[in-house]
Image 1 (cartoon, rainbow, N blue to C red):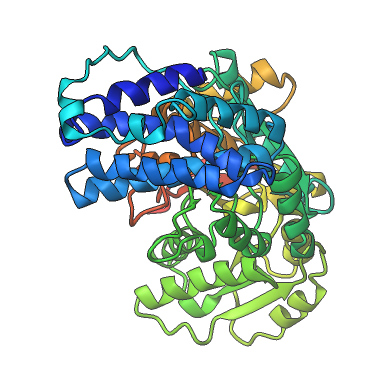
Image 2: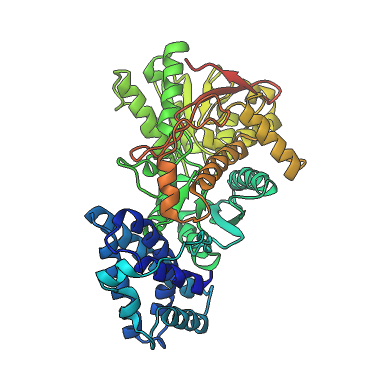
Length: 520
């Protein structure tokens, strides 16, 4: 930015009548965006005397008071000024400029304001009479200053994803990242977002919450990401969300339907794309009872022994209660995360006096496939259903390796349309996937990542070039009836941070392909 030009604005503004609030407030707001970062940078550098900085802070606050006749306008201008000061501190703290540069900019600001000449007060605080008679200069259009937001440069916006890129659930992490990368690449090819390219940086936590915090810190502190998108898992989210909230960083489109991401009222920085596990399991329980005519006592749950399994089981319980059925006697079977140790669950299932005819599975693909393999012949005609987090493609692949009879009829609820379909969203996803990642097969997880990233890109574009987290969140909260070609519109609000509540039904055929299944 040109600091001389900025000070031209100061002189022009303060030569006008100080009480012309209606025309002055927007100019002062612009000045806050120019002067604030310089002040903030100076505050971080110890060699710049505090008294020098405080003089300008005090005088600019006087300008704010004179330029705004309403308390609400005055408070808003003060917040804008303070936010830009904080941005300036970050510029130095994050190493984008050094204190030598900060000193030069601050000295330029002082000289432009007349220190050592007519004096600062002569420029910033003219008398009413002087202001009335002083000549005014036309204001040239303001230049667009570079963003000082964390993770944003003139040329790039950097996001982070924490997920399992190793271990038993690694394909979930890979697919989620693949879908986001496809959406980012598509936007970048078209010129980026307001002139900036999007970049995704991944950190591996192996689907182990004990590793999640270090992964989050690495992305925020070392990689300097703007926010997080597509984090994978519920137990890991329980660690990641408090950190994101502490940093006031966007936590968007996580690959989990757990309620810890769906607080009431919503956490300001947490936004979901997908339907919740409660909505998925509610849909399948209603299907089993109303369309397959099962008795509630004939339905069991296989749930991973952690927050993910708890979230899915809670959804089944809620569905039972909504149907007027006692949920206290639901059979819950379990297994440990990142294992396929389902023997104990199978033994417990064998002991049941009432024949279980359906198992709602809240599992990952390997454990789910192992459970189906071990019980298919023991319980002929058993209905198996899975929530979307299972990893649809990987589950079908695992079952088909065992034989078509293990795969045929297995149900998976989805939070995106069928990848074999021809909706606009699916066609755009397939085009991007084929173009930027040729050879990669369509997948429900990567489709979810693509859709979530596309929703975020839309909001980034609408926020404009002066990107910061608070402005982006305001944009998201004002998103209404966004049509992404899914067959269902997406909306957010201050009290609603989940864009979609739609659940699609699918079932695997004897060729390992997913077919649509009507759940109602």
